[in-house]
Image 1 (spheres, rainbow, N blue to C red):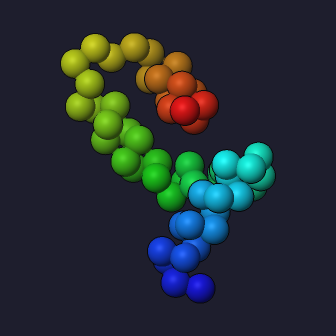
Image 2: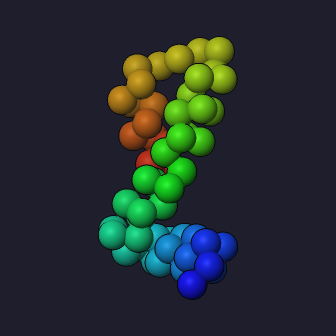
Image 3: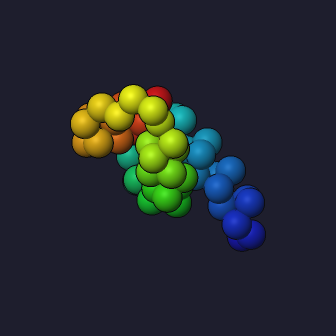
Length: 56
C-alpha cells in the first residue's frame, strides 16, 4: 500500500471512530500540528491547544 493510499485508509477509518487509526493520523501529522501552533499569535496553553486539535 502506497503512502497516499495508507493515509486515505487511516483518515477514513479515523472518521468512523477507529481509535487506532486516529492515533496513526495524529502521529503522522504531529509535526504539522505543532508547526501550526508555533505560527499562532495567541498561544493558549500548549496541552490545551493540542487537545483541541485532536478533537477537531
